[in-house]
Image (tube, rainbow, N blue to C red):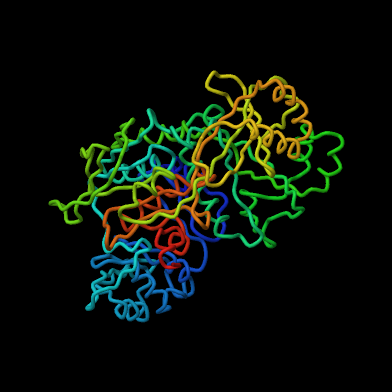
Length: 536
């Protein structure tokens, strides 16, 4: 198409840059700085439409004749299309046969005209205007799309910054409040983090979410961060110590953009960081190559998201309580107060994105089931790059071999510990020993080269407190929209905040605006806080 229309070449290049890893399911492609979104769904149309929840402004049924698109005459397909329409949605199609017209009429469309369009045939035009009141079932249980207004986001970490950016791009005036002195003051202050897709033989929910999340994170990194300084799409080698490859049995070719069995080049490169005694086990231990993996600095990502026009961040603000009050706005208003009972801010929408602290802030209104998880990492400056692998390696902990620290010095990082129900972010000497033990198993030769730095206490440590939900999946969306309209949460990102944050911000915003969801409806519903209410 671009070859025949040179004026489209620049747009074709932008599309081509994101046209990869297109496995069956949903894919969100981003253009114009996030203001133009393309939700690409690959699979059977009827099934995919059932996994969406949005209200279309207009619909085009592709195809010129029945032989090209026989499914368009399927009444079940037309019913699925109608579920994604609101009263007044326009529809057009080059398929103007009587069966299509009759099917659309039965689904609530009023066919206004058919216009001859030689040589293709006739252009059918219709409008959705059923004689009955359409029933809507949003994935986020919202009765109607919200109009942009004021929003308060509590928390200036990855989750809060991502929600603020997504809402601001849609016209919201967003105020971000955080108790720390600056952005990314909590768990998002990690010096550098690893990005790699989760893989599983059954391509589990977590695996699918991680791929969607990685795509969203890399889109922001490529457009707003500096490569090799703030982030690097270096690829990641994962050693599988359970002796299983971990990939689905019938992994399609498109999946190799994300993960594949490590080849000789990747294995040979990582042997430089493996001792001769480990060489034999390295040959038999399964390893995966995550081509879509790499590293990124969380603080740089947070700052980029908070720089979105329409976002105003305030720091050193300690919130003691929340209250919903009546106001001129149809949905009421949320207010936040300090310890002295003084109102700090108010808005029609309130998003809890303060990590584990979100549970305490919501306690008088809703119950958020969150668990604190403390983690510690160790890092130091690179003295001899020959002892380090050329790319990150994970499997028993994770090792990032080369990033620039705040002083501009090449550095490495190894982590992380995982300690449940610990709310303190203090550094522990015992964790340093544990981290070194993990490094010895993951990369024995590298551990030997860095042992002197560990023994002489020349390494540095960082600890932070993350939070997780009981099923280890994020919590995104309204807490209880019937009883508490306008109160949402985006939390429990756990150790995958870098993979999940941008996606969760988009998911929350899409649900509010009745837009196409960036992931399948069943995945979106699995992230709702109400999933625990149902279980109880």
